[in-house]
Image (cartoon, rainbow, N blue to C red; front, top):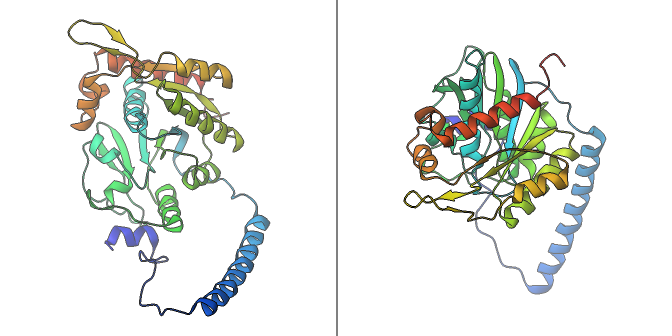
Length: 319
């Protein structure tokens, strides 16, 4: 385990799930042992559940120095959530240069922010032993990708993942930020619940393609935030249309206006449409997001308009 993994986990949990040789038991003896273990485990689980329920939900504690937190989420992977989070953060900064913006990547298993923001290396530690974000394009960034090798898989169980998320939330020295954009992992599992219950979130943005399969999961994502009392600011319809660069014919590869129909069902609005365009993909893969590298392009302007809509729906920091 590297030094940064030890820092995240403080040595409380081992990366190994266990091992060693095991002896075979006869059929009847094995069944008796399984029953005994099952009973013991059942009793332990009951006690653990009782302890958790007696504590209630964790008390939300703001991230020091951060005025407003905007989470970018999706029910399904592969819909362009991380690309949206990166360009939204850059668009917030571009629309108002007086604002300080941070970008937090809590997608522990598949961090994308380091590559998209063209950042490498380990964060430095402050005098108070907090990690300092890495900076590029004027955005302060923190990601699990800075703490492990690029090609190293994060083969961790739930407890270890939650420990890492807790450190990313509490052990980073952001300074003073107006907006912290959080790139959430796909789905509606432990990480999403932990983030939602541990820090006050100003608003959530749901990203989806117009495809029915993606919209089903986006619906679940929006409902999850509502259950934990996080305001949903609206939906972003990504990969909404493809325009042939030669004949200029427009094709709705993933369907048309699916996000708008879902937004109507949920009583929400669509914050904007992002086209399926080669420039967006190339800019992200080269670590030069399109809002930064091609600010005058139609694709960049789509993100800039979305950032305006997001800010318009946020409460003032004093509220």
